[in-house]
Amino acid sequence: MRFGMHISTAPGLTKLADYAAEIGARTYQIFVDSPSTWSYGEYDPEKARAFVERRRELEQCPLVVHTGYLINLSSDNKETAEKSRTALAKEFAKATLVGADYLVLHPGKHMGRGRQRGLELIVEGLSAVFDELPADVEQPLLLLENSEGSGTCLGVGFDELRSLLDGLAEGGRRAGICLDTAHLWGAGYDLSSRESTRRVVDEFAGTVGLEHLHCFHLNDSLKELGSRTDRHAYLGEGEIGLAAFRELVNDARLENCAMILEKTGENKTHSKRLIAELEALRD
Image (cartoon, rainbow, N blue to C red; front, side, top):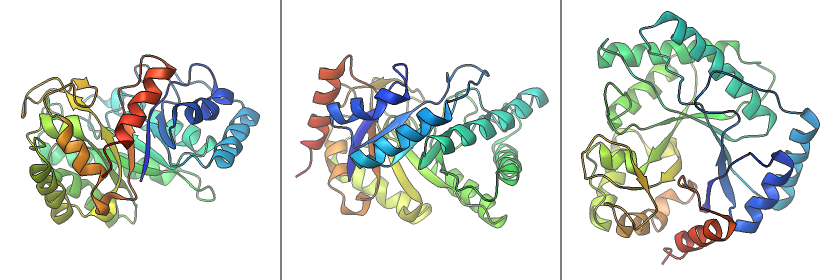
């Protein structure tokens, strides 16, 4: 089981892998562009190759790329839906360039069209993007992230996540799942104790299948259970408490999952301490 956190790319790719090593992150997540805009820059291929090589030397894996927040393949606005497909294709290209293993995507919002139609539109949009990806280049595995359930967000329950995976599988396309603990809590999944957390994992195993689970975003929550609100807190400083995270990092069924703290440290020293505290939860 590998531990890490979301790391800013602001200092540049050439410094990223060494910074991760300094804070003890054996796995980590990044944005490849500003997550709140439609604008996309380009990476210097030489710097990208150097980053991939340095990660390999330091045995840092998996690398997770999180897509931008504006992408919504089930939007009722045609322009937004088209922009979303273009943006996701660009995210795939840049994630591939930096050697990412996973590309995490928030499924989207149905915007009043209804949950079933919204799920169908996501599958249609993803399928269209997959069809345009270069067939001769190995792509990162797309991971659909569960939602806390605010507004018309999709991917709230495990049944919806299963529906998305099944829809893609029917077209011969493969994807996986990333679970966010704060989103689980906001959606009403009880993580208040080790026992209840184990039951949530059991439910996921029975509904979706643990073979599809590749990554956890480990976040405590500032809001109460079932709030349908996403407000992150450092582990042990929110409503969830440490018991859930102790259970997750000690569940042998999750040994191959990347365990990533999404709420980054205030500085290098703080980030290093946060990862060390997470590792210390292992029995």
